[in-house]
Image 1 (cartoon, rainbow, N blue to C red):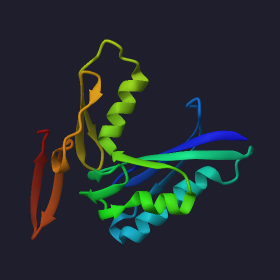
Image 2: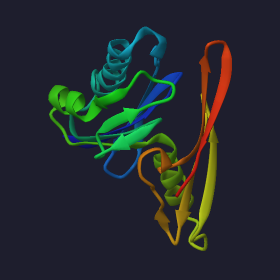
Image 3: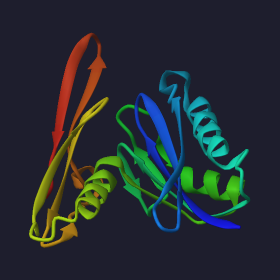
Length: 179
């Protein structure tokens, strides 16, 4: 039986999932629209469709060891999204939903922080002790590695980012920063 992990990139526009072996070899990828405008239940269904698509119909039996995900917004306790600027997550315990359905360990991080750390590790930049990454997707976000450690602040100060909102016909922009 092949031992595997799932990685999820939950974004404002799409959800991308990959099934990996213990050695980090990608076996399968599945992508679905997030459907954020349809509400939280639709988003959760789309997440489940991505995970199900990764683990179903494998040529070889797999043992799923865990799921890790990145989501935009403010993350608490590596499982709960306090707030997301472009997905209707408000104090939403995504970890509870994933663990209940798939009965495997789950860990959640801010999407840009997770991406920055992964890029830094995968690029094997041994001389780079300090790195700044800017990521452009549905929104714009950034992350920092200082002295070879991912810097994560608290609350809205946990990442660099720009959040857009349209309220009463006006376009508002919030810029958050590391404190």
